Image 1 (tube, helix red, strand yellow):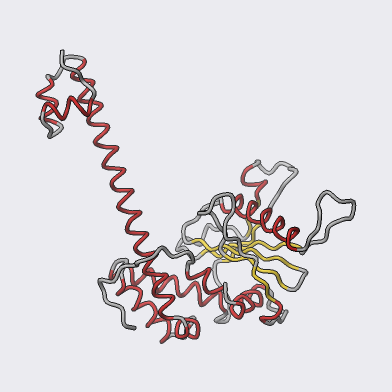
Image 2: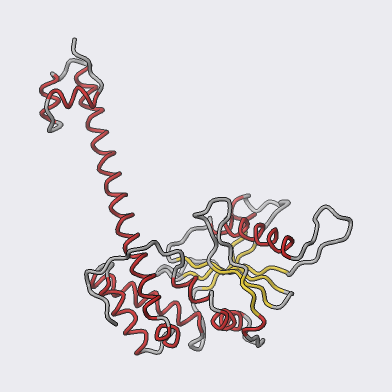
Length: 283
């Protein structure tokens, strides 16, 4: 793969590898059969209904597709555990059904009963801590203390696949990438090594070989976003610390336990800078 180690993404990726992979009908069909091992479907049976935006342009689900006209599957992936995924998937499901009724020109205000595919909701968890991960999440149990509720959502949790199926390959892909990031950092070297190792191990090999440049771009974009996010968090932490120090110094000045010049020196500022930032006025 011809990617320089200093390469940075020049665009903001809209798709993760997960979303990109299963946005292809061939692999979506394989995903369905991994979750329903006794059934066989083809690409012709798959129709994607992945949401591009829900409420806000930055909020969208990972993968959604219909199998024939009988089933809607929404599938999310997480490497960091969060039970809030249940509430998000509840919102995704509602929006997906809204779009379905629009597309099929069914009125929710008419007298005729609407028809719609039954839903199945899945979370593929690829994080390291799998010992305490439940097999299913319930909205009512998690957020309503298990009380009977007018709403409930059940999400099946998958931590790995079987017999080298597409789920097992995807989980292995994430592990290889995490290992390479630990060795090289979030950069092009980690990306290229991940792809090389996975191709050699026959992990998503066909997908990676056919879309190597595209996958590299996606991964580099997200690596760059991760770096920028880390910088943002660190800057915010530093700002909070500085704000806390300034607040303390200002309080000491007001209590006449420190002079303005002493406080400015502690804050590594000039007297004028300290007065301006702290809002002190010349007496």
